[in-house]
Length: 138
Image 1 (cartoon, one colour):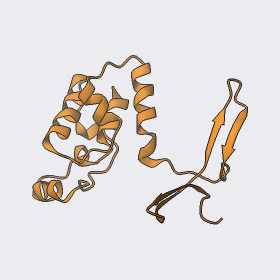
Image 2: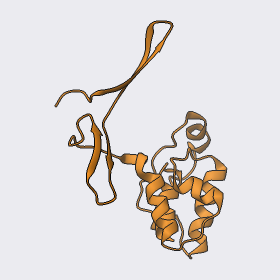
Image 3: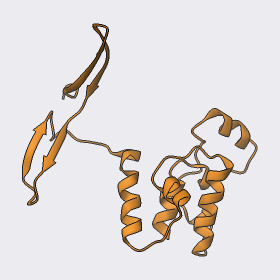
């Protein structure tokens, strides 16, 4: 399996500034492929890119979230105090605490948060995905 296909090239002053690789597909109303470019059969690992869709499913299930809670559920947070407060609040609202989260108590994404938390007890709320996990438990 080679590199993904080139989908777009950014050129500035005659020089290639960026090359964007990938694949894309559009489906019609009955699920038929109406457009595709690149290797759309290539395995894809969504990882955090799918969080907005997962948060949408939580909302469509009837869970009411504030704008701040949606933001934390649909993204990867960096364990700033406000992020952790929001996740703890989401869990508390349904009678849970961070022990119910199944994401590891991994390190924060940014150095400033890692330094601030270096002496703190490891907590799954520090993990960048804890907002998504909390929303799914609601």
